[in-house]
Image (tube, rainbow, N blue to C red; front, side, top):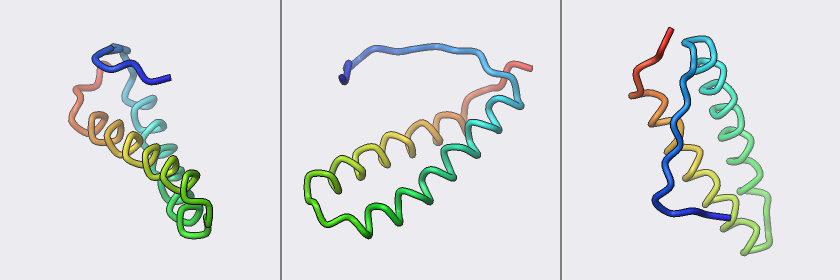
Length: 68
């Protein structure tokens, strides 16, 4: 369910941002292994798409001002 052009705004504390970053990085690491071990083309492409999305979120978190 992808909605192009829909922007969501949430305010996060510094601790929440750091926790979210850690979770994303952990999941990205897990996904690398999962992508490498997956034989099914469609599933692998879906994982790669999700990996791209997580990387985008991680990048946005890195440049977004944190509300303490």
